[in-house]
Image (cartoon, rainbow, N blue to C red):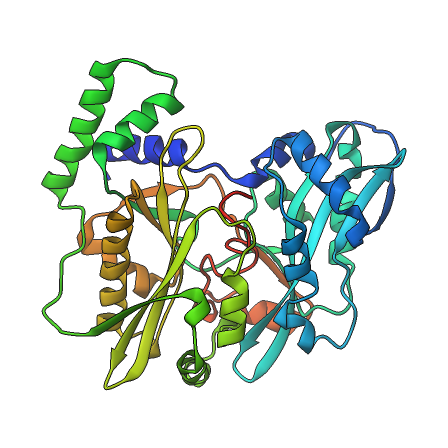
Length: 407
């Protein structure tokens, strides 16, 4: 990658991507200063308002109670639990919630094994109580029931805590690298200028010109295939029984750790109350049979920059058929353009799937650290998962796409 490309990648992703957990940087430390004591206890639904007040304090957007009910009352994973899992833990001091860590149950499959995963989510602690951040994580990792512990949206500070509890970094190659394409250079340039607080029209003009020229020279867009495939575009609520057939066939392939993807779980996963964006399911059929799908999420405009992005939230194809995956990738790119997004991005997926887009010259942004950490209760399983080929990690995993665009 040239210096120009590196600068472009850094500027683009820096302008459009702000993780909710970035607020945790100031609130977490493995060696924090002394702090006032607070009581640690499990979360109840009565804590909703207190947790929302804490989110407002941290500068996060608020959630809806309906999403709490979705995660901890209507979650399909609850049907597979033979034990109780807390909704999470809070730190309480003087009648106020001063710290929080959510605990979301999810089902994973590895060959014939059905595994219960605990996903840590939305951790936030007031600065004066940061000395007790470790107690939240200790409670999370002390759970006896789950087979797996996952953290999928970790910043560096959260990653250090995960490693302190003997978690391993996801071994799937390049998960710390984002692939993305600029779809609209001029609006992107204006959004970038807002992000950088630059008002110069000349700078904006040359930024847009540079992106547009780079796209033309490097041909940064998908090339259409000559193979004809039937493409259907449906909503997530229209996901039907044909997805269950594809899912069962997928489980019969080479064993890999896969988040549960039956039709009921897919519908639940993307039925997010208060979601300010939209999601569509692109399906490839052959002779009336579903051969693969891609779920594309389109973001509402960023309140600060006005920029919109589209992401591939999940993608699956029978036998990882390259032709099916390529058709899905192209359809997702085209839909992002039609939706009016300024950025189209892809995170995760195994190397063979990511390589499909290599001819389209995506920009690449490498994060300071991998955001995905795991730990298996079974030591043998933990060692098996140290092999990158055992994973099919994507934004569908953990809590990465469980929240709405406004969350």
